[in-house]
Length: 113
Image (cartoon, rainbow, N blue to C red; front, side):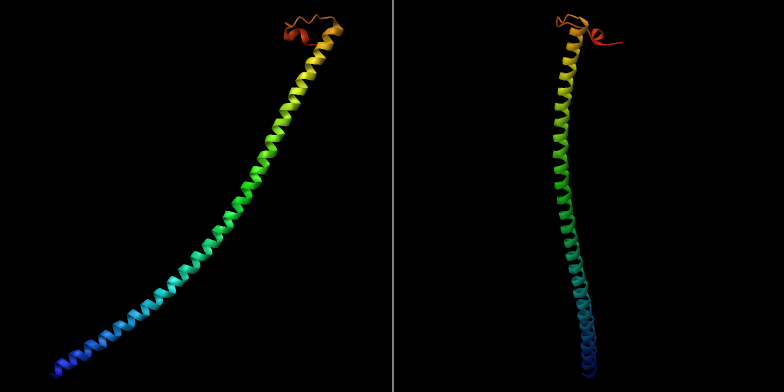
């Protein structure tokens, strides 16, 4: 019976040691989980900052794109005005030089050498 009792004591002691190790491992695991949660929170914060920066950049892009499209439209309008002015000058020059504008004038007739 003594040997059975000794065996029980040894097993109980081994069990208590293993339980202490498990408790230590659980504490380490909880500490690591806490660090992971903190790191995730930091990453979420960084992601939010990046998202905000991207939204700002996209808003700036849309603004610049709108301005650029307006500039392109204005340049097209100016080009059309320039072409109209050039046609009027060619017509005035033809009148001055004596060309008859019959609507079928070749390009070379409008040039001055």
